[in-house]
Image 1 (cartoon, rainbow, N blue to C red):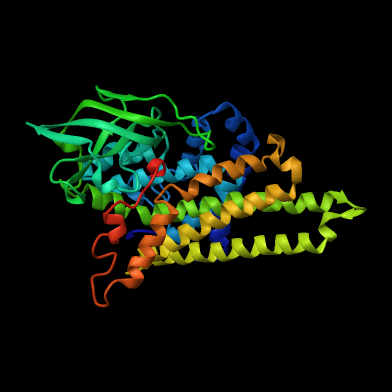
Image 2 (image 1 turned 60 degrees about the horizontal axis):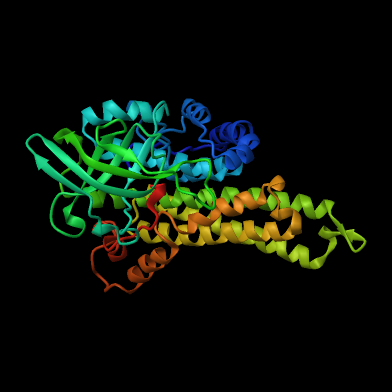
Amino acid sequence: MSDTITITTAEEREAIIGAVREFADTELAPFAAERDEKHLFPRESLRKAGELGLGGIYVREEFGGTALSRTDTVAIFEELAKGDPAVAAYISIHNMVAWMIDTYGDETQRAQWVPQLTAMQEFGGYCLTEPGAGSDAANITTSAVRDGDDYVLTGVKQFISGAGEAAVYVVMARTGEPGARGISAFLVPGDAPGLSFGPPEKKMGWHAQPTRPVILDGVRVPASALLGAEGRGFAIAMSALNGGRLNIAACSLGGAQWALDRAVQYVHERVAFGEPLAEKQSILFQVADMRTDLQAARLMVSDGARAVDEHSPDATMRCAMAKRFATDAGFDVANRALQLHGGYGYLQDYGIERVVRDLRVHQILEGTNEIMRLIVGREMLRPSGSASLQRSGGSSAERSGGSAMRSAS
């Protein structure tokens, strides 16, 4: 992305990460269990995140963005997720919405929405997935019919994070032919007549953010609500995925690191068969493998972020590899941390089971990990000399879908 700032010194980076760490320690971690138990959406904490500059981390500075690089962004999301993975994941969704409007919106759209979003005085939602179109996202059926100076949107979106809370939704709807080329993107205000929301989904995890269907029943928006050119909506949606996949991978790292840290503390304290668990070789091997897996995943996420910052032609593949590897590793490490706690790990009081539940969905959203394998495999096997993923607007896997349970984007 252009117009970003890379933190160039260790002191600058530590100052930023330190501020985020303090926010996660004071605003997110102490209330994570309560948010999970009571399904509380932390509006005030999110607004404080906006004051810290976390509402538009890689949005340009003109309308309040922080304009940081993706390399710095993934470090920020890892720290946020140590406080609460579910809240960190919603901040990722919100950032993607802000970035899409800042990147593809005209000056009027940017001025109307981006300052509110970067300050997190208002929240954003992203609407691509439908009840019958998850991984096969190019086959959405929500329609947008031109009527004079307006478009009329009709359809249902599924698994939408922040539904009912957002002030603006980026909605993908069909304006033309079947397939990806017939899809356009629209900015739909949260109070638009005809816009309503289904009941909250009863989820395994992510209880700190609402997930509901978004129902568009003849929602009329002016033609000026079109984001980018007509027929470019799917390309816009796909362009946001590299960053979204890196963010959610970083959230998996943060949640898993928190769980591993708790497991290390627990095996020092727990005595079994006359000695601390930490003195048993089998335990040493387990925590060594967990730490190694997380470090390998962290390096892959950093590599994907660097590819985006450098506009590398294989950025899509490297981000897909990072997302698949890090979300698999993150869930596995958190699950093993639960096992090391024994029966206590299964109790809500210890917090490990909450993180396991929250991280499980990361293997599904932002494109399932099966779709990530398709992207990588097809890139590896495509004929030499063909157009790069970036120039062609995404891999064939993405063009045929590329996203299941798109609640996080």
